[in-house]
Length: 444
Image (cartoon, rainbow, N blue to C red; front, side):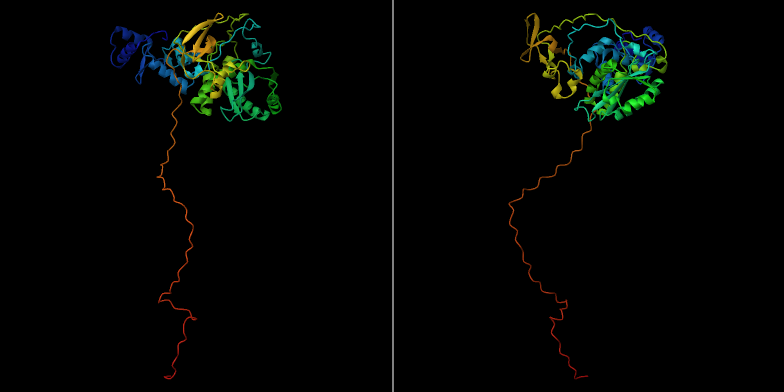
C-alpha cells in the first residue's frame, strides 16, 4: 500500500465514496481491495492514515513532520524518521523526508564538519566488539556505562549517567549532580530495575573505563549482584551513542525545558532504526535476546574513498563556518553548536556567493567579503524551517500607577509651641484652685 501514489483529488473521491457511494468502478475496486475506512474525515488502512502524495502541495506532509518532530518521538534522521512515520501513516517517501530535514535551521547549525577520510581502517568489517555478546563472555545483556559531561549552559546538572545495552542499543540517561561513586551506584540500580522490567533480565556484565566514579560503592554493588565487570580504555558503542543523543538533546533543549527535552530525546534515540540489527531499540522484546539474530555489518575499505568537494554557483545561499569550528581539531564536537552563541559553528545569517575562483587547483568562493573553500560552506537552497516549542504563557503585567508629583525642596522643620487651653466651665477645678467658702452657722 505504501507504494501507491495517491493524489489529493483521488483521495477526495475515496472519501466521498466511503461516505455515500463510489463515483466510479475504479474507486469502488480500490476501496474493496485495500479495505479502507473513514474516521474523523481521514482515510485509514489497517489503522494507518493515508497521506496524499503531491509535490505541488507539500503543506500537509510538512505539517505532520513538524508536529512529530517537535512534540513526539520522531528521530531527526532520514531512516529513523521514515521508519517512525510509516508506523502511523501511508504515503511518505524517503526523498521528501530527507529534503525536509535538510531545511531545518537547528540541524543546519549543528551540521557535522566534513571528514577528511584519510585514516587507514584497521579492520575490514564492522562489529569488532561483537564477541562480547557471546554466552561464554559477557552474554546478550552486556551493558556499557559511561559519564557524559553536561555543558554548564544546558543545566545545573553536571553529568549524564549513560547506559547502553550492546545487543539492542537501548539507551538510558540519568542526570547527576556530582561524580561520586555512590551517586553512580544509585543510577545503576534504576537501570537494573528498568532493564528487568522491559527485557526480562538484569544486565549480565558491566563494561566501563577505569574512572574513580566506577569504584568503591559502585563496584561493591556490582559484586553483590553477582555481575561481571570489565574495564576497557573506552566503551565504543556508548561513545557513539553519546554523539547521537547529544545532538538531539541540543535541539530539544531550545524548544522545551530540561525535563521534557530529556524525555523526548530518549524517545527519539530509542526509535532510531539500527542499520546493523534492522530494528529500533524500543522494538526489542525479551524473546529477541534469547535467539540468535543476524547482524548486518558492512565491509570497510582499507583506504576510505574521499568525497569530492561540493560545487557551488554564484548567487547560491550558504552558511559559512565560524571561529568555534575552524579553531577546533582534536576536541571538535558537533553538538556544541547549540551550546551557546559563543560556541556557534555556522553563521545564523544566510549569505549569497558573489564570486568564485580557483586557487592552486581548489575552488574558492567569496561570501560576506571573505574567501572560503567549499568544505567551509553549507548550501541552503529552499525555505528554512524552524522547529518551535509550545507558546509560553505571558506573565501578568502589573498596572502602572500614575507617577507622583515631584516633591519640592525640603524645608527646615519648625517646632510648634502649644497654646494654653482654658478649662471648660463644666469641669470642676482642683481644690488648690478653689477658694474656701464661708459657712454661716447663725441659723442653726
